Image: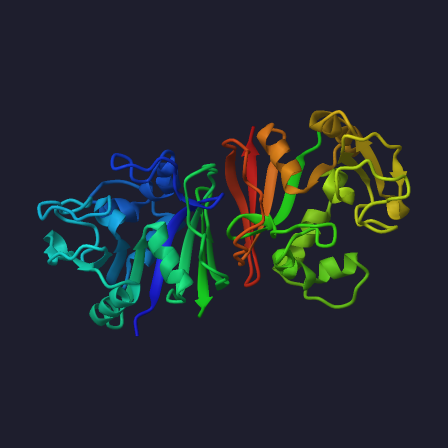
Length: 211
Length: 211
């Protein structure tokens, strides 16, 4: 059965987005600081069709978390902002060729036909909850991983429900002071750090979760 | 001049003490979970005069942070609870032979004569603020380190004032959900992870701070 994982950049004070998130700035003020480590990696730049970047331990982590993904699950805000219903013309934040390339299951309250994008990404809209979305994602992913893409609230729901097998945190050496916290309302998950990768830019800690 | 450092155990959600701290339970509900990694180390057990424990990477970290200390600074609650004034009979939480063995500077609003304990610890009570306490600690420590022992509020004050050179976090794989946070009201310190030590019990990250 699919392994269910989540990998996310987080500030040292626990935020995965800065304050005052908006349609114009969905990751909030200062939120981009969480991802600076990523933008300098050769692997991420290649994925975006960009030149340059460095083949560092951080770049290897990007390769690692990009492999063997059968499906994604994300919250409605991560797909397209707001609470919907979206117009049929609105195809989300991610452009014509979103960086997923597999089926994506979007948690929403508003039914909508699947949206096939370029490059293999299909957005499927799930209105009957997190368990249903996971069942559908597993059925698609088969032996590959299901990735909980975010945002914080979606990760929290899967973690609190005991459905997450792994949480891979990229801890940026940044204090945001305010914003959206990841580890709230998640109960008391039993975590074990099983892998740590360190660089001057970020510390990656992979936690296995005993459910 | 003395290097000013702080090493502290912290939950994955950012707490250094659990909720409902009291005189009976100064580290709050669940707070002991932050220190489980420590109690199993040979180095800590030796320091306490106990048998056993394991010579692991975690134990080496304990040795490491125990070396070359010339003075400690702590808040009044960490010395003895409450806000004072304490009676002259009250000698704090730490027993007749406190685990410091060097001068300790206690931030308080209530003047008191220095309190010489067994084993080399002397508690000095400082009523004129964090800069004064640091000046006195530096004068004592000479080329050795000054350690900000805690609690959270004291660490926050030194960090916010740009007086901390290093923050060494022991990140326990524990979600407390509530309690006392470390990294609040500290501004935007510029941190760089310079050393990471990993074990299945805890992840140690040493941050240098550019002030």
